[in-house]
Image (cartoon, rainbow, N blue to C red):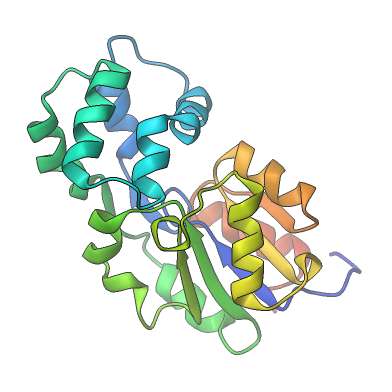
Length: 202
């Protein structure tokens, strides 16, 4: 158990951490040649099409056109957009119960690279978090330092007060560089493991 003071804010990524997502599996299916999961996530984070869409700079139809062309996907932009919303599913079983048990002792927040299609599908996660932050509303994306800076400003806290959970290594490294207590977690089991190890569940 850690002897360091506990954080006051628990900040969660969504897809791949609290939400079930088939996004990267489906992208791999559509690629000419499948790639390693970590490499695919890094490619997505650097993708001009994905970055523009998740910063709220382009419309969904434009995003689909650009992504198909940029990645050489084996589908049309129309077909991609038709299935895109379903790539992010609901919360992993047990997630809402875990968050409810943590709420009150910590401020709960999310910071997601998201877009209008997925965000609207979940109604902006109203009632789930004390504050819900999305890249397309902030105008910045992870792993850019500006995204984390905007999040800290919105939360009104210093970096050391935040424990951050994300499944993408570049995002975790970027958060740590700013002094945020960042943990790479894969799914709800990974989140629970960190919370237990740090003594933040009790």
